[in-house]
Image (tube, rainbow, N blue to C red; front, side):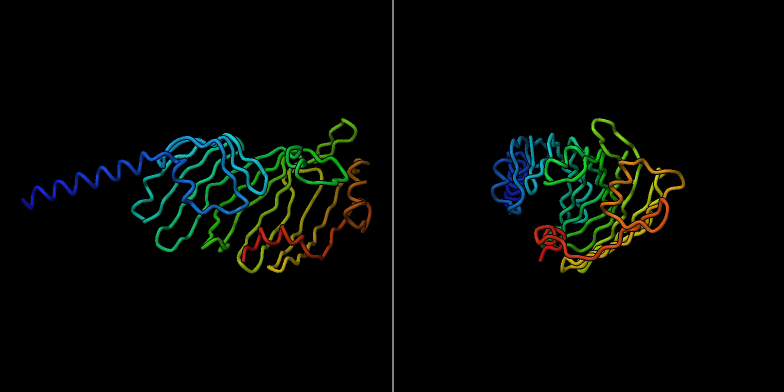
Length: 257
Protein backbone atom coordinates (compact mmCIF):
# COMPACT_ATOMS: atom_id res chain seq x y z
CA UNK A 1 0.00 0.00 0.00
CA UNK A 2 2.80 2.44 0.91
CA UNK A 3 4.50 1.81 -2.43
CA UNK A 4 1.24 2.54 -4.22
CA UNK A 5 0.87 5.86 -2.36
CA UNK A 6 4.44 6.86 -3.33
CA UNK A 7 3.72 6.30 -7.01
CA UNK A 8 0.39 8.15 -6.67
CA UNK A 9 2.00 11.18 -4.99
CA UNK A 10 4.78 11.23 -7.58
CA UNK A 11 2.23 11.07 -10.38
CA UNK A 12 0.20 13.92 -8.85
CA UNK A 13 3.33 16.03 -8.39
CA UNK A 14 4.26 15.53 -12.05
CA UNK A 15 0.75 16.52 -13.06
CA UNK A 16 0.92 19.72 -11.01
CA UNK A 17 4.32 20.66 -12.47
CA UNK A 18 3.07 19.94 -16.00
CA UNK A 19 -0.01 22.10 -15.41
CA UNK A 20 2.12 24.98 -14.08
CA UNK A 21 4.56 24.80 -16.97
CA UNK A 22 1.77 24.83 -19.53
CA UNK A 23 -0.26 27.50 -17.75
CA UNK A 24 -0.86 30.40 -20.17
CA UNK A 25 1.35 33.36 -19.29
CA UNK A 26 -1.71 35.63 -19.52
CA UNK A 27 -3.02 33.92 -16.38
CA UNK A 28 0.29 34.29 -14.57
CA UNK A 29 0.93 38.00 -15.23
CA UNK A 30 -1.99 39.30 -13.08
CA UNK A 31 -0.29 37.68 -10.07
CA UNK A 32 3.12 39.24 -10.84
CA UNK A 33 3.78 42.59 -9.18
CA UNK A 34 5.06 44.76 -12.05
CA UNK A 35 6.10 48.40 -11.54
CA UNK A 36 3.39 50.92 -12.37
CA UNK A 37 5.59 52.29 -15.15
CA UNK A 38 5.54 48.91 -16.99
CA UNK A 39 2.65 47.90 -19.25
CA UNK A 40 2.51 44.62 -21.19
CA UNK A 41 0.21 43.90 -24.15
CA UNK A 42 -0.36 41.11 -26.65
CA UNK A 43 1.17 38.30 -24.55
CA UNK A 44 0.94 34.74 -25.91
CA UNK A 45 2.62 31.58 -24.58
CA UNK A 46 3.35 29.90 -21.26
CA UNK A 47 6.01 30.12 -18.55
CA UNK A 48 8.51 28.25 -20.76
CA UNK A 49 8.33 30.60 -23.72
CA UNK A 50 6.20 32.84 -25.85
CA UNK A 51 5.82 36.28 -27.35
CA UNK A 52 4.54 39.75 -26.53
CA UNK A 53 3.52 42.45 -28.97
CA UNK A 54 4.77 45.32 -26.82
CA UNK A 55 6.09 46.33 -23.41
CA UNK A 56 5.98 50.02 -22.51
CA UNK A 57 8.32 51.35 -19.82
CA UNK A 58 7.47 54.92 -18.83
CA UNK A 59 5.55 55.11 -22.13
CA UNK A 60 8.68 54.03 -24.04
CA UNK A 61 7.93 51.10 -26.39
CA UNK A 62 9.79 47.80 -26.73
CA UNK A 63 8.25 45.69 -29.50
CA UNK A 64 8.44 42.26 -31.13
CA UNK A 65 9.31 40.39 -27.93
CA UNK A 66 10.23 36.70 -27.76
CA UNK A 67 11.09 35.08 -24.44
CA UNK A 68 12.22 31.61 -23.37
CA UNK A 69 13.01 29.96 -20.07
CA UNK A 70 16.65 28.97 -19.39
CA UNK A 71 16.73 25.73 -17.33
CA UNK A 72 20.50 26.03 -16.70
CA UNK A 73 19.84 28.39 -13.75
CA UNK A 74 17.65 26.00 -11.77
CA UNK A 75 20.61 24.50 -9.85
CA UNK A 76 21.45 28.03 -8.63
CA UNK A 77 17.86 28.42 -7.38
CA UNK A 78 17.24 31.14 -9.93
CA UNK A 79 14.58 31.65 -12.56
CA UNK A 80 16.23 32.80 -15.80
CA UNK A 81 14.85 34.03 -19.11
CA UNK A 82 16.40 35.05 -22.41
CA UNK A 83 14.40 37.88 -24.01
CA UNK A 84 14.86 38.96 -27.63
CA UNK A 85 13.11 41.96 -29.18
CA UNK A 86 13.30 44.23 -32.19
CA UNK A 87 15.86 46.55 -30.62
CA UNK A 88 18.12 43.97 -28.96
CA UNK A 89 18.23 41.30 -26.27
CA UNK A 90 18.50 40.83 -22.49
CA UNK A 91 18.98 37.99 -20.04
CA UNK A 92 17.17 38.22 -16.69
CA UNK A 93 17.75 36.07 -13.59
CA UNK A 94 15.56 36.13 -10.47
CA UNK A 95 16.93 34.69 -7.21
CA UNK A 96 14.07 32.89 -5.45
CA UNK A 97 15.88 33.03 -2.09
CA UNK A 98 16.62 36.74 -1.66
CA UNK A 99 14.54 38.38 -4.42
CA UNK A 100 17.61 39.69 -6.24
CA UNK A 101 17.14 40.44 -9.95
CA UNK A 102 20.16 40.34 -12.25
CA UNK A 103 20.26 41.67 -15.80
CA UNK A 104 23.12 40.74 -18.12
CA UNK A 105 24.06 40.33 -21.79
CA UNK A 106 21.89 43.29 -22.66
CA UNK A 107 21.97 45.10 -25.98
CA UNK A 108 19.51 47.80 -27.03
CA UNK A 109 19.75 49.89 -30.19
CA UNK A 110 17.51 52.75 -31.27
CA UNK A 111 17.72 55.41 -34.00
CA UNK A 112 18.12 58.81 -32.39
CA UNK A 113 15.18 60.07 -34.47
CA UNK A 114 12.93 57.55 -32.67
CA UNK A 115 14.14 58.63 -29.24
CA UNK A 116 13.63 62.32 -30.04
CA UNK A 117 9.88 61.69 -30.21
CA UNK A 118 10.00 61.33 -26.42
CA UNK A 119 12.17 64.43 -25.79
CA UNK A 120 10.39 67.79 -26.09
CA UNK A 121 11.92 71.14 -27.11
CA UNK A 122 15.09 69.88 -28.80
CA UNK A 123 17.07 72.85 -30.18
CA UNK A 124 18.97 70.84 -32.83
CA UNK A 125 18.23 67.70 -34.84
CA UNK A 126 20.88 65.09 -33.97
CA UNK A 127 21.14 61.88 -36.01
CA UNK A 128 22.74 58.47 -35.56
CA UNK A 129 22.05 55.33 -33.54
CA UNK A 130 22.24 54.80 -29.79
CA UNK A 131 23.48 51.43 -28.53
CA UNK A 132 23.10 50.54 -24.85
CA UNK A 133 25.17 47.60 -23.61
CA UNK A 134 24.71 46.51 -19.99
CA UNK A 135 27.42 44.17 -18.72
CA UNK A 136 25.63 43.55 -15.45
CA UNK A 137 22.83 45.17 -13.46
CA UNK A 138 21.61 43.91 -10.10
CA UNK A 139 18.52 45.00 -8.16
CA UNK A 140 17.38 43.84 -4.73
CA UNK A 141 13.73 44.43 -3.81
CA UNK A 142 13.41 47.01 -6.59
CA UNK A 143 16.53 48.97 -5.53
CA UNK A 144 19.73 49.30 -7.54
CA UNK A 145 22.75 47.39 -6.22
CA UNK A 146 25.20 47.65 -9.13
CA UNK A 147 25.14 48.74 -12.76
CA UNK A 148 27.95 48.57 -15.31
CA UNK A 149 27.86 49.15 -19.04
CA UNK A 150 28.31 51.58 -21.88
CA UNK A 151 26.25 53.80 -24.17
CA UNK A 152 27.61 54.25 -27.70
CA UNK A 153 26.36 56.90 -30.11
CA UNK A 154 27.10 55.56 -33.61
CA UNK A 155 27.37 58.02 -36.51
CA UNK A 156 26.64 60.97 -34.26
CA UNK A 157 25.80 63.96 -36.35
CA UNK A 158 23.48 66.86 -37.13
CA UNK A 159 20.70 67.18 -39.67
CA UNK A 160 21.37 70.60 -41.23
CA UNK A 161 18.27 71.28 -43.37
CA UNK A 162 18.30 67.78 -44.84
CA UNK A 163 22.10 67.50 -45.04
CA UNK A 164 23.48 65.05 -42.46
CA UNK A 165 26.88 65.91 -41.02
CA UNK A 166 28.54 62.82 -39.49
CA UNK A 167 31.18 63.42 -36.80
CA UNK A 168 31.81 59.80 -35.77
CA UNK A 169 31.21 57.42 -32.87
CA UNK A 170 31.35 58.33 -29.17
CA UNK A 171 31.07 56.29 -26.00
CA UNK A 172 29.96 56.81 -22.39
CA UNK A 173 31.03 54.11 -19.91
CA UNK A 174 29.13 54.03 -16.62
CA UNK A 175 29.18 52.31 -13.24
CA UNK A 176 26.43 52.75 -10.67
CA UNK A 177 25.47 51.88 -7.11
CA UNK A 178 22.81 53.13 -4.65
CA UNK A 179 24.88 56.25 -3.88
CA UNK A 180 26.07 57.45 -7.28
CA UNK A 181 26.79 56.88 -10.96
CA UNK A 182 30.26 57.53 -12.38
CA UNK A 183 30.80 57.90 -16.11
CA UNK A 184 33.59 58.59 -18.57
CA UNK A 185 33.25 59.97 -22.09
CA UNK A 186 35.57 59.36 -25.04
CA UNK A 187 35.58 59.33 -28.83
CA UNK A 188 35.81 56.18 -30.97
CA UNK A 189 37.71 57.04 -34.15
CA UNK A 190 35.75 60.28 -34.57
CA UNK A 191 36.20 63.74 -36.04
CA UNK A 192 36.32 65.32 -32.59
CA UNK A 193 38.69 64.34 -29.77
CA UNK A 194 36.51 63.95 -26.67
CA UNK A 195 37.62 63.07 -23.14
CA UNK A 196 36.25 63.58 -19.65
CA UNK A 197 33.45 62.36 -17.45
CA UNK A 198 31.23 63.13 -14.54
CA UNK A 199 29.24 61.93 -11.58
CA UNK A 200 25.57 61.76 -10.59
CA UNK A 201 24.77 61.51 -6.88
CA UNK A 202 21.70 59.98 -5.28
CA UNK A 203 20.13 63.38 -4.61
CA UNK A 204 20.14 64.02 -8.37
CA UNK A 205 23.11 66.39 -8.20
CA UNK A 206 25.48 66.03 -11.15
CA UNK A 207 28.89 67.29 -12.27
CA UNK A 208 30.20 67.11 -15.84
CA UNK A 209 33.66 68.00 -17.15
CA UNK A 210 34.32 67.10 -20.81
CA UNK A 211 36.96 68.48 -23.18
CA UNK A 212 36.41 68.62 -26.95
CA UNK A 213 39.05 69.37 -29.58
CA UNK A 214 39.70 69.05 -33.30
CA UNK A 215 42.96 69.07 -35.26
CA UNK A 216 41.26 70.43 -38.36
CA UNK A 217 38.42 72.86 -38.95
CA UNK A 218 35.01 72.13 -37.45
CA UNK A 219 31.93 72.26 -39.68
CA UNK A 220 29.98 75.49 -39.02
CA UNK A 221 26.74 73.69 -37.92
CA UNK A 222 28.74 71.57 -35.45
CA UNK A 223 30.56 74.65 -34.21
CA UNK A 224 27.21 76.39 -33.67
CA UNK A 225 26.04 73.51 -31.47
CA UNK A 226 29.30 73.53 -29.51
CA UNK A 227 28.90 77.27 -28.92
CA UNK A 228 25.48 76.53 -27.38
CA UNK A 229 26.54 73.76 -25.00
CA UNK A 230 30.25 74.39 -24.36
CA UNK A 231 32.73 77.16 -23.57
CA UNK A 232 35.41 77.88 -26.16
CA UNK A 233 38.89 77.81 -24.57
CA UNK A 234 41.01 78.24 -27.72
CA UNK A 235 40.91 77.65 -31.48
CA UNK A 236 38.90 74.46 -32.10
CA UNK A 237 38.98 73.56 -28.40
CA UNK A 238 35.93 73.54 -26.12
CA UNK A 239 35.01 72.49 -22.61
CA UNK A 240 31.69 71.45 -21.10
CA UNK A 241 31.82 72.08 -17.36
CA UNK A 242 28.48 72.00 -15.60
CA UNK A 243 26.94 71.37 -12.20
CA UNK A 244 23.25 71.05 -11.47
CA UNK A 245 20.36 68.84 -10.44
CA UNK A 246 18.53 66.35 -12.62
CA UNK A 247 14.74 66.58 -12.99
CA UNK A 248 13.05 64.73 -10.13
CA UNK A 249 11.45 62.08 -12.38
CA UNK A 250 14.82 61.11 -13.91
CA UNK A 251 16.54 61.01 -10.49
CA UNK A 252 13.80 58.69 -9.21
CA UNK A 253 14.39 56.28 -12.10
CA UNK A 254 18.15 56.18 -11.47
CA UNK A 255 17.90 55.91 -7.67
CA UNK A 256 14.76 54.09 -6.54
CA UNK A 257 14.17 54.56 -2.82
